[in-house]
Image 1 (cartoon, helix red, strand yellow):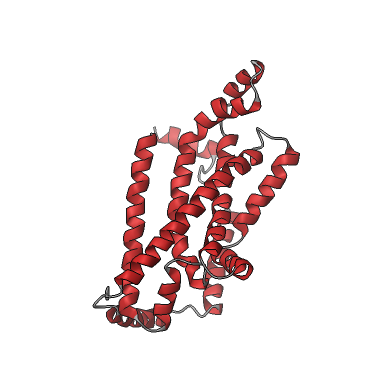
Image 2 (image 1 turned 60 degrees about the vertical axis):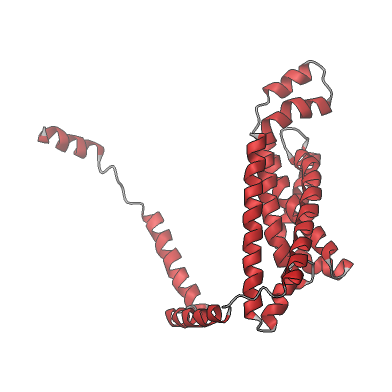
Length: 266
């Protein structure tokens, strides 16, 4: 038996050959991480000091101040309204744009402009879009709504187009052979195959819009973000803690609602 194993090993060589290119790549990546950390002044001393400063910061948040609950509730309602309106329009616009971007349903001269538009919507962080829209339409919820509409199109449009490209084309070809119009092909051959995924995309984007609506307010695009930023600038940390707790509670409620919506459509 030992002779057979020896012959097999000699005949086939080492089955676990060393890939020196992969090892070189890992070594180069490790060296670059060290260089980047040194260049950016990332150090263990600063991290330890940050833990102490963070503990002091958290200590100033206690006890939590909910005395201005009317202002808090009003800002939360505005934040939800921004997220709901932006999600509704973003989902509606993403449907045709995602369909136009699907390469198995549309010719290249249609898909490329649609994909370029989706890429533009995904190119910038929502805060950057918020700054641009605040400059264009002024401070307030409208800038936040426009910001999150573009963010929704960038996310849902891309995933919806990819979902359409992964469908089975047999139902599509069958309806085309029977002479069905294009709208009927979309409604009866495409939508049933991507409906559940699209509902998942939409619910996730609503959660993202709810979180982002609290963030774009920092630059004046409405919502509770402006109040949060003002509290931070005034060193009003106890009220800041109340705002953060309220945002966490809002996101958790949104998550529960999203789960119930998914159960209804499953």
